[in-house]
Image (cartoon, rainbow, N blue to C red; front, top):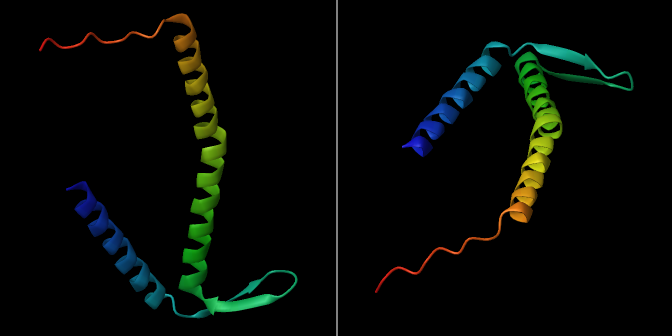
Length: 93
């Protein structure tokens, strides 16, 4: 069920992006100091949003996820050191 919901959401986002790109079809010039790029405005805006999402995800991964994973592995190591391994009993046959 979740997979179908994610697929439907992805299709809606792709359709909205296509409509947004079609509405903003005017050319815009992006000056990169060493050169210029002339692309449709919709492509530039969607590209900027994509780059922002990727950079935000990279910062989130480095600032939150990696430290939490290190803390979790440290906690697991401490627990393994303090408590002995418990072997579950065999079920009766």
